[in-house]
Length: 187
Image (cartoon, rainbow, N blue to C red; front, side):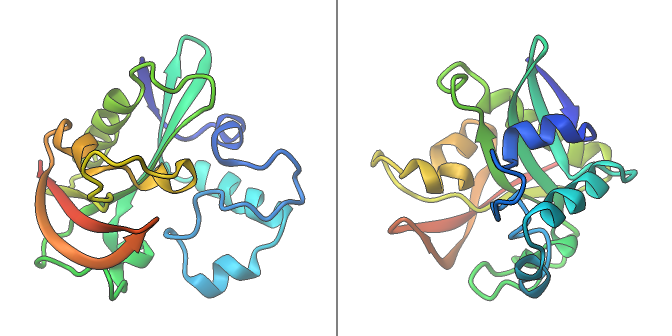
């Protein structure tokens, strides 16, 4: 498994883009940009916004590759550059300039093949390489209960514990009936 910065738009489209270019799918923008801007971007505009993100000096996250196949995506950025900067349900723990890791997606057909662990490790390395003192994730605390695949993008407590994160706080955010928690890893 190779992890690379998400600077290839075609590979990003494969992981987070719609089947139809005019569809209004997330494109992993809902936590990256303000809600008003997110709602205003329609159809192909969403993809063009992501194309611009892929062309910036700091990529919008990391992609996992199994040989030539792009198989996973992780969104990671400074918390101050995301909607988590103002999120009332997921509080700030302190004044550290932490990075947020809020979306982990494995491409259908490649799930249950060991993509998640190197993908999270790659996101951690990406944040560290860009000067982050710590990285946070906001997964569900689901115990051993199954998480709806549509909402699984936030990850689970167990997934992040296995990647060296520790529970750092509670939130009032809930996804799919499960509470979200703040997991943090010092870098």
